[in-house]
Image (tube, rainbow, N blue to C red; front, side, top):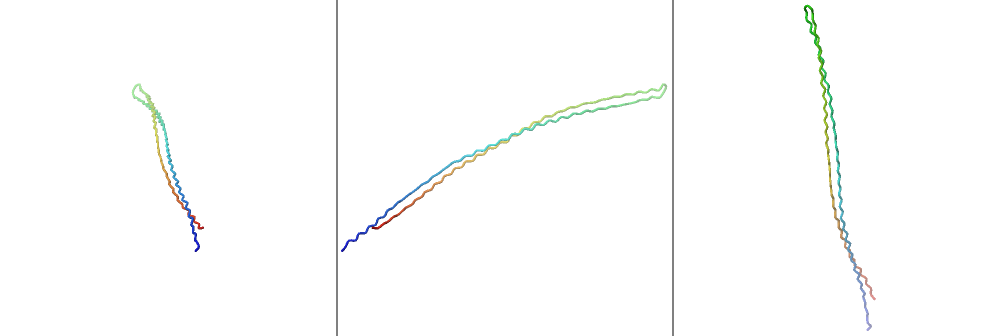
Length: 113
């Protein structure tokens, strides 16, 4: 009887890969606004009064008296005002990101001979 030779060659190839990535970001925003308002109010006033009076008396000899009076007043006022406003804001944002990827593969090659 003859001999039978059976051969089977099997090859395995495994591969594995890992990818990991990470990052961090930080953002800061600041703003500031300042305003100033100045106001001036001025008032001038003048008042004037004139009075005339006349008195007549009958008799011998007749007489007359006249009088004039005058008055006046002046006024001045000034008002200053100043106001200041300041607005400020600040904001911060932080972000962290991480990714992980894993891959595996297997290749099987067989041959008989």
